[in-house]
Amino acid sequence: MPKQNWATSALNVLIANRCLFCGSGGEAVCRGCFQDLPWLEHCCKCCALPIGAKEGICGHCQKQAPPFQHCISLWSYDFPIDKVIKDFKYQHNSAAKQFLCLQLAKLVSQHNKHRISNFDALLAVPSHPFKRLIRGYNQAYVLAREVSKHCTIPLIQLIKKSRWTGSQQGLGRKARLQNLENSFQLTGPVKGMKLLLVDDVITTTSTASIISHMLMDAGAESVSLASLARTPQHMTT
Ligand SMILES: [Zn+2]
Ligand SMILES: [Zn+2]
Image (tube, rainbow, N blue to C red):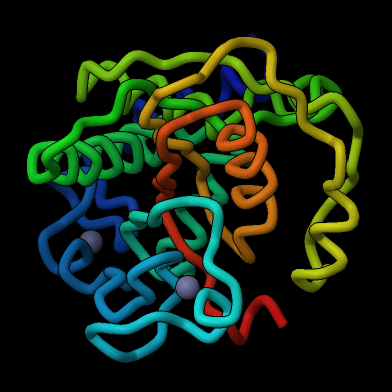
């Protein structure tokens, strides 16, 4: 383990019994902070974009139906969950990782229970090997692995990011799609499978759409998405 990661982990153990959000003692996340998180309630039935209405489909999905069936997310990517997701992603904060993985696993489990047809397999949105080298791991894979264990749905690693695309931050939907074109590769069969694609944050659905298209073209029966958070529209345009 790199020195910095070791130090971060040691610090996490020391503060393990403190609330991730307010620092009060006793629990990893205190009840008050848990309730105050920006839970995603009013969002698009297809892509989970926060739209402020209980039922409905957002403008993007009305214009063009997405290649995935639907998207399940826990939170709107807002304060204070955004900071904890960044701590998990960039700082290897193990308390943040445990909390986030468990919440996503619970959401997928509830969802899986209430559906007539269960998911056959989970897939993680891949990152380029260079990015993994810099960051130390792929956070989408870490999430998918924990969800897989908790929900006993097999995790299959059949997507590779074959081309370095740089950061997508600051790019609009169209520019993201152009940037991602031909950057993913499928390495095994998915014919007839109901798949759940896992990512940490879904921003414009460009990545998810490109991968879903690829999986559907390869004969998957359906593709759904699961993520920790969904970025509100005002932050993506
Ligand atoms: Zn708290
Ligand atoms: Zn939508």
